[in-house]
Image (cartoon, rainbow, N blue to C red; front, side, top):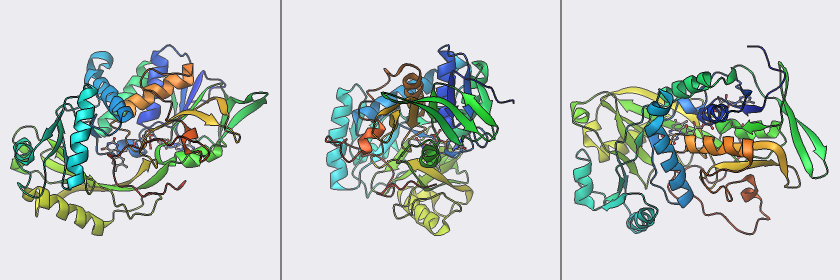
Length: 406
Ligand SMILES: Cc1cc2nc3c(=O)[nH]c(=O)nc-3n(C[C@H](O)[C@H](O)[C@H](O)COP(=O)(O)OP(=O)(O)OC[C@H]3O[C@@H](n4cnc5c(N)ncnc54)[C@H](O)[C@@H]3O)c2cc1C
């Protein structure tokens, strides 16, 4: 595809955030929406995810993002004629420590006030909800029937079709190498993007990039503290026990191990909190053994089951586990007019559609109704800021320090 000379919006990155945001912008009537993707559509974290989706969360903003996204997934086929394979399987967040019980009960109460039907299950109720769960060793947990999973590969297909239907131009193998800006009295404003194939003139750029967003930001004069780190997922061979009706998904809060049914086997994933930040280049087989042992402790039927698939990929994360949604900033902390950042903070399946919708809104109109983005901007990482933002407590145990890994 030839490089257009001009665009009304350039979206950088064709993962789930860039893909859905480009579609939303074009569906709103924005005429020339162009996506520049350095590889192929969906080739980043978005096609490699586990697809766990929940509205259960520990902050109001995360709950709102999850709910918006679940509603979107649930209504996709009616609105778009395509879907991301959402299945509302129900999700149990399993408590093993006294503090999990205390915090879980408090979370459930707050979430019920927010209108989300989250219930506390005592150990017997939890065992009834998940018959394959080992009966001892846990203290119950919070449960939300509306949580579920998507099929990440089908999601890539869905946003690809959606972009095609709304006339988005997708330029694969086209890398953003820099941003063109113009200085003014009140700060700078975007005038275009540069690629090895030439320049596209535009007044609006939406930067996504998943685990590579920090590097992408540097090319645009932005310091974006998004990290990238290895995360591993595996799927066991099928077992008749998993075929007995829909299986509730489970998240082991203490270790960050999660699992769900996948094609008659069990998909499970876990992050190693000791992992050094940086791109994943291989499977850590020793750590995978630990994951399997932990899983077999909770789901004894998996002990000795063959693995059908194993993969390691780089997952994005932010220090407070919340998304970044807001304008790019110049070196004096002033917004760069026309530059918007959208990062899902490692939760691009569960919050992706909402983050994409909000990112498109901010890029086009400067405000959004999806969620209050007041605390989600890049400025929250500014040490001079007086009011700290409470992070999202339900998250994988990522390395504490976010490094701007390439
Ligand atoms: C193994 C694994 C399991 C996961 N499981 C879950 C889960 O169960 N639930 C959940 O909510 N989240 C999960 N995630 C996280 C989720 O996948 C990510 O948060 C989400 O996919 C990020 O979407 P994105 O569009 O921001 O990034 P990406 O999908 O990585 O897309 C960014 C795109 O930007 C492109 N790009 C980068 N630099 C440039 C450049 N200079 N020029 C042009 N293009 C560029 C990249 O090539 C890439 O295609 C998982 C992630 C991994 C790796």
